[in-house]
Image 1 (tube, rainbow, N blue to C red):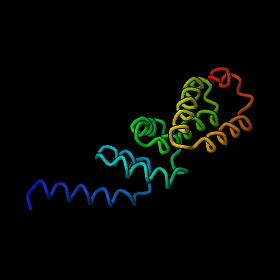
Image 2: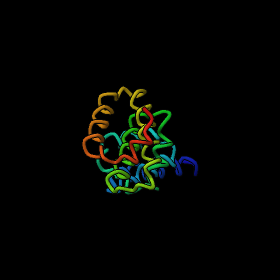
Image 3: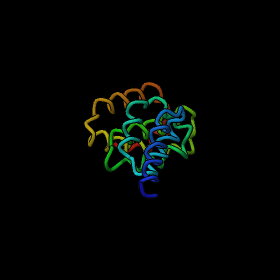
Image 4: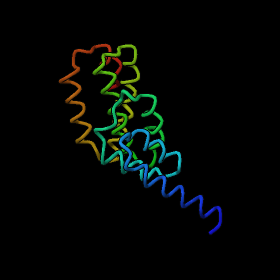
Length: 140
């Protein structure tokens, strides 16, 4: 076995081990850094509720990396980022939340998640309908 083969084997073993790690955000980042966007997307799809927008700095990069080829997975991450901003009443970040909502809408259309996105909009109206600063930034 060549050193290149050994290196690839070690990377494959690391990827397999990483998938069982409890910190899913770190795992998704690791997988993306090692060219396994497919595995990162599958993990996000399977564990979407474990991706919290409180990890803003860690979620935005994977969300952006998955936008083109894995819109459903990216939608999950943008939804999480958006919800966290609104739930934590970060009014100075409402412009970002409005941007994330627009991005999520585009991703939902591409991924066939229109029903999920409509449910998200209904949730936002119900739980955050009085956040006029946010809604004033949302493009109709």
